[in-house]
Amino acid sequence: MRIKVLVIGKTVPSFMADGVEEYWGRVRHYCSFDYEVLPDVKRSPSLTAEKLCEMESDAFLKRIKPTDFLVLLDERGVLQDSMKMAQSVGQWMNSGAVNPVFIIGGAYGFGDGLRKRANALWSLSPLTFSHQLARLVFAEQLYRAFTIIRGEPYHHK
Image (cartoon, rainbow, N blue to C red; front, side, top):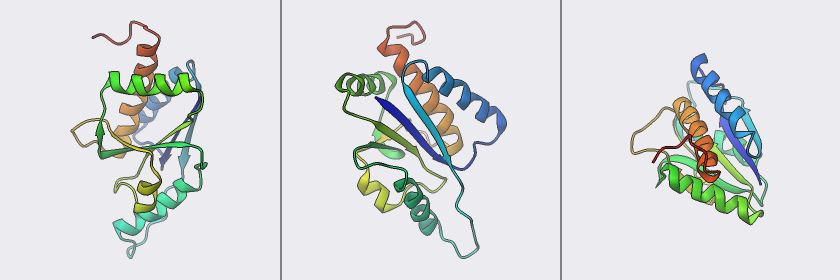
């Protein structure tokens, strides 16, 4: 299994970027892993939030293979907890046939084309996080999922 995480735009501020990189380094001990930061869409005064979402979604779609299992991290998705996430990741690992691609969109979410292509929509919390903070939360939770799968003491029930 190879996991890919796609995001749009750099992670700022630097303390969040450092945290994200810390957890991605930990995740790499458990699986093949790619983290790709797509460039921000150039903004103009005439660019609506809807059009921005569509442009970002098109950029994501160009990075996805037809065989990828696409999971969008979205505030309107199915609420996940650490154990559910670990269960899903463990099932994918055991099947050997799934290459999950997780996408954390920009500030305005996802366009319709990307939503239609998605295999799953997950929510990290009933709270709304900035797309920057969602990166850090998801990175930690993916690391936690692997420690749960391996029975390591990081996760306390």
